[in-house]
Image (cartoon, rainbow, N blue to C red):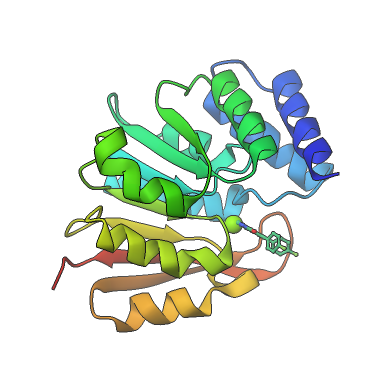
Length: 216
Ligand SMILES: O=c1[nH]cnc2c(O)c(F)c(-c3ccc(F)cc3)c(-c3ccc(F)cc3)c12
Ligand SMILES: [Mg+2]
């Protein structure tokens, strides 16, 4: 049934937003999720924190883990300067297809590339096959059991540099205790917690920012 809801979300955005206007696509998805069917986009409240941190970082190269329907890829892309890029990874082929259509409709397909498959497979290929040096900004929003292992993989593949910003969704709900414990105690990150709420409902959640201090 899951593919059906995401298809309805895409149809709603295409019927109610303006082609080529990413803000109108973000607004339409938020309206759909608040008034018709809840979905796990990062949402408008946590989205404002994401916006602030993207603006502060002004990244040239962004990695997103967990595309879903493309909401946060569109949300981030609308803030990036010319020449900036987002690589976003999505395991679920139905979601990846919906996201590609959402990103195309929003007019940010020259900024955002959707990589369909697993982070464990893609991350080790990024330098050689995608010409990546290091990431300026990484948004972790895929699956709670993969935040820590993928963060360690990014380090091991030399894909972070002093000042790289990691931003993790859902650190309170569902909660990502192993990731939080690692970034807060390993000595290689400066961490900041941003309390907020689960998207579209009145339940506590938070984002965690972890700035890489370098390979100490
Ligand atoms: O899986 C996710 N990835 C990324 N972001 C997510 C997110 O921002 C969420 F709010 C939820 C969420 C939390 C509470 C809830 F009741 C439903 C869904 C999930 C999630 C958690 C467990 C699942 F079995 C399915 C989805 C995710
Ligand atoms: Mg999330």
